[in-house]
Image 1 (cartoon, rainbow, N blue to C red):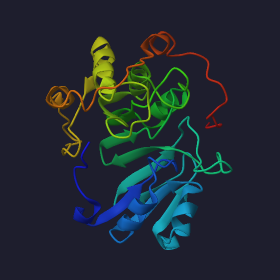
Image 2: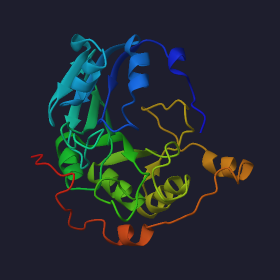
Image 3: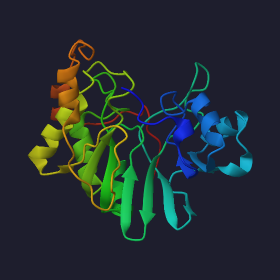
Image 4: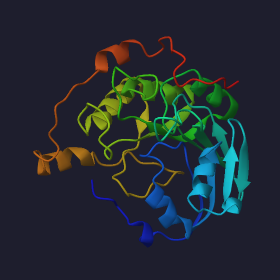
Amino acid sequence: MHRPIAIEELPPIRAVILSHDHYDHLDHAAIRALDGKVDLFLTPLGVGDRLTAWGVAKDKVRQFDWWQGTEVDGLRLTATPAQHFSGRGFTDGNRTLWASWVMEDDGLRVFFSGDSGYFDGFAEIGRRFGPFDLTLMETGAYNAQWPYVHMHPPHTVQAHQDLRGRWLLPVHNGTFDLGMHTWDDPFDEVLRFAAERGVQVATPMMGERVDMNAPQEGARWWRSREQEEPQAWTRVHASARGPAAASIRGVMPDHGKRGYK
């Protein structure tokens, strides 16, 4: 997938929020390139230390535990729980925190899941902060071998409903090839489960502008792209829909969990 815009083409940015320190979410070269354009970096605990080690000024970095937050130009941002893990090597596992984020601006409420498996924390976040006008929900890189750190599409839809969301915008798909499913499977599957439950889903093309006050369904752009370049996107398809769809509210093990209440 071609990047919709180069970093050097971006305008000045007031603040960047980070969910955790895995390589596909925290890239050293990208942070260094963004540093001159960004006023503030908002991170979970420990992730900010990585930024300052890379040369980002300490006064530009703010770090938060779950349920902590800050206000930037009237926008309220709160780090909230997620069920995942962290680390960038063999010896630093879970030494930094991971998080989802709540964004509140007057009457508008937006939720960003970061990376997370399905867990009861979504319902608690929905109780404390919901309902949400828009939820940016992970759906991609899932597999039956790791349902506790990445959500399958039915989990994504259930989490959105737990959060008391209005519009769902699926993210974490169509870019990095980290799962066994085909690249377009997350889009089709989340739409299928959302339709069964009457959930509104926005599917903007990569780089397309989204009006958070008035989201739109958008075109099914991945279907036309697959028809244009069928061989480029063909992969072995090892779907794990059945077990995930049948056990949305299954018991979660300790991996990736942390007390959040």
